[in-house]
Length: 279
Image (cartoon, rainbow, N blue to C red):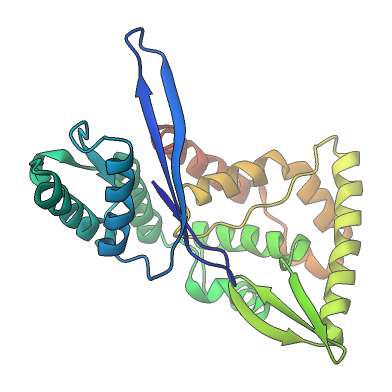
């Protein structure tokens, strides 16, 4: 089961089935896809799942449920098993048939580790660029913290925002930005223009460095393995990033020293096995 939401749209829920035959061949199929008419509470989710299990005669074949630790998921399991028992007279043991998601547990461990090392992206880092720049210039962040912060700022320098313009109203662009909405005036177009120029210069740096141009990924605490993905991408494009920052004096303060790149490599090595085991 997967539940998705896009800003300005509706919540949707998809239910897929995975099974093997007598020759251990793996199959999968989409059983149902719903647009939620109400909040994605555990009780509401359980109703959608129950209806699907009934439609495909799967209530008795349900072996176990693996979910992450979200509170609505726990409520969903309790309500689902109750619905199956009341309506179908089929008993399921919630204690033994509820299996915690190992990948989620692993990512909770990694999150605690990164937080302890003070390298987790802070909420305010995802806001105004000036806040991040000021943190670097203040010099209060040290070691891994400063290194990761530099990479995050580099990603925002080259790919500052992801605009999704909805419509123009009286000369102003109404757009969404990281699941928040706001009104931007002429500065919007100036920023888009400067972003385009930076991308062109970075593309040239990638060509000179013989590196495939890829977007520098910004890590987000709630996205699994995003710190690993950001470091992997940054190290892959190390030569191009260094060359670009050498040419762009306004951003030379973001240049990573060899010891800082070594820190990235060391942290990537630590995170590698966790990434493998949780994907």
